[in-house]
Length: 125
Image (cartoon, rainbow, N blue to C red; front, side):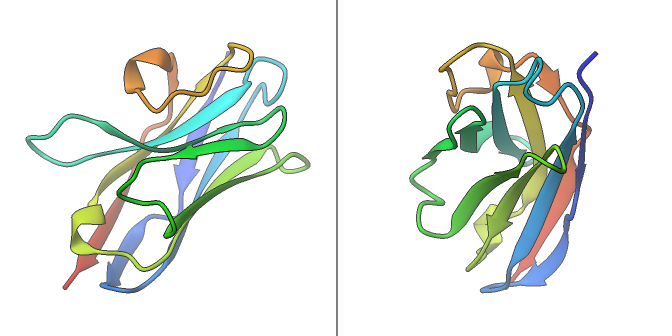
């Protein structure tokens, strides 16, 4: 069974940085792609970044390009989301999610069957 555990959320001021971690069981056995998503009250969950762990290919939402970086550490079976130049609109609960399909790493939440519990990120102005 795939388990995902996020950590690293917190509160920062505008312009600050945070690094989120997603520890994944069944890493590279069942998991082929991992996405990062965020949700704020009253809004739909949106894709932020994703990575295909087989070759490290990445994809980003336009709103975070140049500020967020998704990466992987195969030895630690952990995925990361480095968030720099944070803005108040980045505030939300951040989730990592995983899928097993090959060469498939979309930014749309419905395609991911496995989800972590989420971690809160708050950016104050």
